[in-house]
Image (cartoon, rainbow, N blue to C red; front, side, top):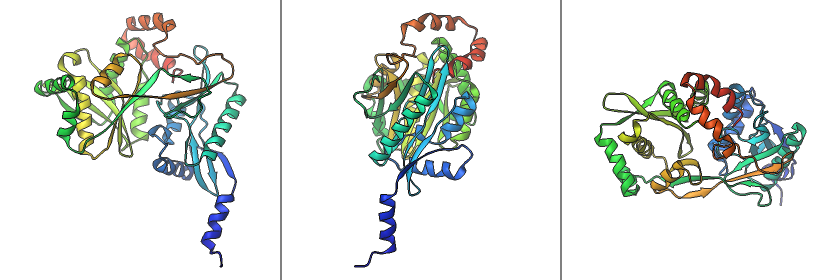
Length: 361
């Protein structure tokens, strides 16, 4: 029986070696191939998209190492990495800074293992304190883990009213309060209103704000997959806003801000309902409420919406430290810094914040 040329090609591809390559920002063809793989790979998330390489490098000046493994010209795995180095928070290689999900996205276990081995080789060459992979699913039970974070996800029902009825009664009452109060949502063309609410919000909580140009670049780089929805009161005054990402059939509200009056107006509840309603009408299937720290206010808020927490597996290789770093507001050693930050004038905080928050990642 004669072997066809198609069968010969398939056999040759299957026996070809896996090769690790590095994504170059200016290589449009490679970027397109990377994103095509991410769109199709079940393990991939929005944070595996190639555009993050430009944003992390351009806005925060962090060196990037976006690795992919291919066989016979076909990508089998991707791993986005960036180095975050500072005197205050240490030196780390992370997949991925400013992202809640990361790690390897692969279609074959061999390619996944190869990229993780290469990531460890890069980490050792750079002399970092640790390598951090922000995995959705556990890959290395024997690696030190950061168990602080969980995520909340739920299917979006195909009918708007079914989604309303799925919200627990007390939270549903808050949504209806916002409706009766005349709140409405608008899609913004720029980050101006969002940033004012976001920066004031994080300042009240004692944490530095990311620079406005970061949000502008998100809207530019991920045009069509990123938007801002702002809630306004009866007078048209912005009271709450959210920047969301869209990936395949999912919506992920990612950054948000509210003014102090939003609480009494139920604007925060109304905001997430409006995003859910709009997503339902777009035909999206999953509402990803994102990451929260265990036993915090945002954790309780999402549970009150009827979402159940799922653990995230942030796995570490430690090279020059003995324990997983705790660079987050829950760490008591940052309590004085948080209290001091709250007392800074908002203008000073917005000017100084980007120099600090770029190293938090």
